[in-house]
Length: 483
Image (cartoon, rainbow, N blue to C red; front, side):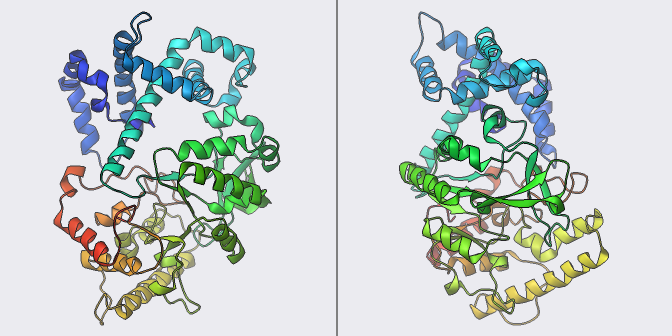
């Protein structure tokens, strides 16, 4: 996403004194200060500001590097990028230009002439709006260059697995993929999840669902292209909701999770494609196998070479006790929590329960009471598990989670034989609030907009964080994605 671009790191910024003067203006600086002081990330406002700067950068780029008779090395590198990712890049950028021209991303409401990417009218639009399409190609090129550079930095610092990418479940129904690959999707269906203890009504995520029959007929072209792009510039790919490799929970549009049903895929073929792309790209694959995943599914994922995804609070024995470190599987990634669950400090304080109660998310009072009782039991079980490992002293369970206790929990995970350990950034910084609270509307919790409490430069040399890293190393965890 261009919203994450470091615009001051773009060559056109460095060579344009006019752009730098514009950015130093009082008006521009006031807006930057407002963004930095806000407790929440305002993606819309930040994006609007960045897109305006990108327009200026593109004009400088065309003037300096794309003159017909004097194309520079940088201009040739851009042309190579465009041709190398044709036709998918061109179609994506055409979609963006059409969205801008027609005023909406909801392509199913566009005039019929533009609803299919291969229509003659779309081809005419590409030619007549070539400069606009090229602008969006330029923006994607900048994203590619900066992601590539980040990967090189990871290699330089000997991070064995470089970058860790995440492949989300489903496809946005109004996105470019849904437009380009519309014949691969199930009509009138959205993906979701059945009712569970976190969401009693189940979930309807509003995402488009691939049609397994059409995917197969097309030789899994859409899947192959998706994997290839998400495996670029990284060493680990996490597949969200790995159950979706086997089956997807289909919910009729307008319905709830209570109306849904599971629909199977051709899983052996999908796993074969995944294995092939993993070997070709030399990328390790992690399957997020949480929730309603049976032992048989986990065995099949294991046999296919995917790493399991094991969370501290979810790994329990028959009596609810925490699984001891030695009993974790070797072919797995272990973590204390995820972006969809409370941070460790938030979990200990019951922060998620308080937010859901105050926001009237609970349908019944007894559900909130049950969550509180379960959380107290979870704290007790975890405290006892840490004590058995010699990571905490006996005695009363403390009401708040100290930094030393948090470190002890990660040391517990570091002692597992599992191949990878990942540390959540929010835990590393001692954050109370989680990035995302599933099931809570925006009026209750600002999911995905919560800012980290400290600036990057304020924690890179933090003694507590350096001590955390050394503690992980003492437990046998070194490099890669583990710290």
